[in-house]
Image (cartoon, rainbow, N blue to C red; front, side):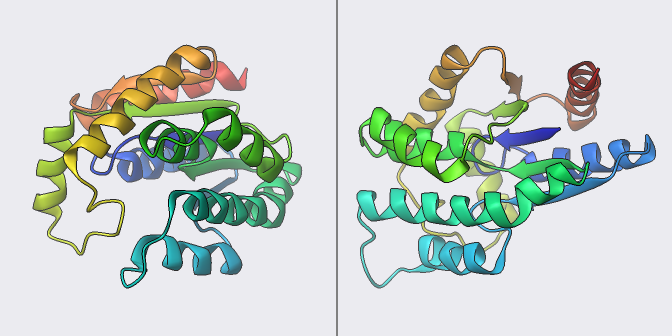
Length: 204
């Protein structure tokens, strides 16, 4: 079972991944938690370039290819072996992030972004994707309260963040059976319950 979590920064993805992990393990499942970009040594090095390279402009085409490169390594080095070994894999961001950020928000051709990333994932699509939807102003407010150093994407302007939010809503229409849209303004305990019930149903 391969489950991914998507949504803006501050939407509570990390919290829900941690809670779902605990619940799955308590029910007897073996779980692997990972993230994108990252998850392997090579992919983590690419992550550092993508998120913390501030001295040189990273062009949108470069950005798309770097994300896809990290993803290709991640899928083959960690995700596929874990799934084959019978683990439930939970991933913080995956192919949908590229479709939204590089395609819909950066303005690259969605067909191109999809084609490149289909090569990267090698047919390994998530069984289930939770998108935590959050208004942009609330996302920005939560980021400020975290009081942490913001990475390159977290520093993007509000207009860019609005495009990513609309992008996720559009993705729900593209993949209605796979994507579950959740209101991230809800209390974490309520979200946790919905996520667990949906996961249980998908695992039957």
